[in-house]
Image (cartoon, rainbow over all chains, first blue to last red; front, side):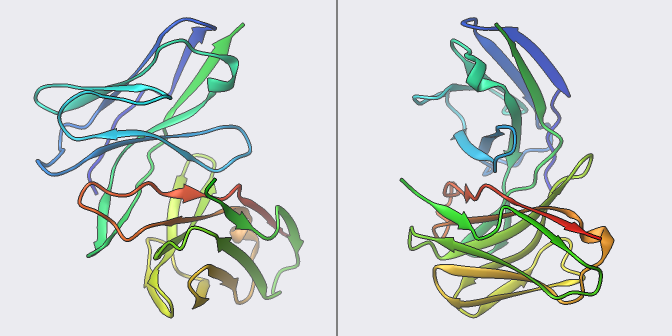
Length: 113
Length: 115
């Protein structure tokens, strides 16, 4: 399984940007980088994914290093509802047509009012 | 809105009981998954199904079985519950994967306590 490394925890203030780093030095050329987050007492939810270039959606932005060995999830203006565990994931194939998410420990993000 | 529904949010069962955890998705997804989540161990894949009546073992299948008789429903079965199966169980589903990997949608989880 391809591995990712994230800080155990981070803290930020409401309405400030948050940059969540992820290292994936063993990434292969075809691995997409996926981010999910898990709010308290809920199942994980999709945030964003990308391959080489930076990606934006309504939830966040994903900045991918040129060598693809690291990436950063950016929350532009954090709210209290963004407090969650954030997972950076490289998906593994199970069989043709199916991949599985291999979850690490993730980063627990705390947002201060 | 996409929806993965797990039938029970909280269950308490006795050791040796047969336990059924039910999951239904309304998105016509081919792939369905069962994970368990434990503190310090993260989420681990138990079983996976890519079509009706088709299943594949995940990373920790021991002590579990699954059933997929209809496309929308995927059941996890604990044949004889044990205390080390106390955990939160998460069902998920996705379309048959594209190269980039389709979004996987999770249910809210089922908290199982085996006493």
